[in-house]
Length: 379
Ligand code: PMP
Image 1: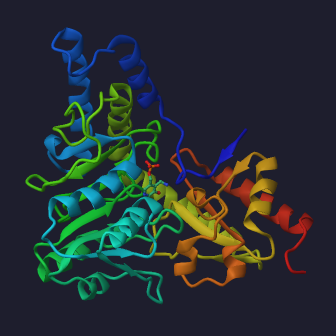
Image 2 (image 1 turned 45 degrees about the horizontal axis):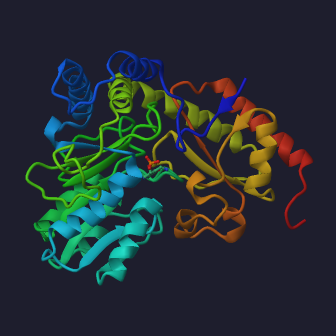
């Protein structure tokens, strides 16, 4: 039996999403642009998916554009907003702990003449709304920040951050990468004054290859992909009806259970932390104020990859820092100010509603076995 504790990297597709995708592929395979009945039915599936997602975000259907995933959504937001508002200013404010799909487009904007400010974490491992307020001025075209950090689970106060930014500079656009928080922590666009928001299907039990970008009504954006004019001209290409239908189904299933899932994650995290506290080599990097479904810690003396592969032998799957970093030193753990030895030994575990307490016990047992048998680094 596998013990999958890497749900921030990706998730297993839920039955509702599987069924929705299969049904769209087998029974409703028309092109939504076709004028006949088959096309109309496919278009209806797109509409249903859009409304399921809009309901969970608290926005209008026409404010959502389907993309291939959050990497595309983030690229579209950063480059598309700045291109649509060339006179909005020459500064971009973001954070040091963003996903590469935000950091890289920002770096390109830097090459194109923008000044990019990357806010560091403070001594509490946080980035406060006040820090955003201090960095933003009327020359700031865009602020881009994440709702939940994918490596350590830091939760940013999106509502207050947006309010402070708009108070200081009403013309500044705000993009939120909500990938690791959508359907997992309360987040409603009625309360959060964002202009664009990225979400991704495969982090919430839909297949890989589908995401969306919320674009507040009235906000202009320059498309990245042009062609046939689908998605109101903002994302050309024949729509992936099966993936969109699956995304909608996964959201409809997950969103109503958000509070119930959070309560379960809190229990799981408490159990894990309690057991890790008994291991002298274990040191926790995630803040208690962070989301309860991501726990990052080091097992001092044993390199992440060695521990990861040791656990894998018992069918336990975890991540070393971030799956996206693929062995490179994590910029997030660096931003946390961790010593090199802790960065090299960091493990991230991330839960799903299917995670249970016996799996946590197995993980801790696996770590203890690893400590007893594996060669220690630097000893
Ligand atoms: N942003 C964050 C915070 C993420 O964790 C990820 C996925 N690791 C992405 C963006 C990219 O999402 P996708 O895999 O859908 O391109």
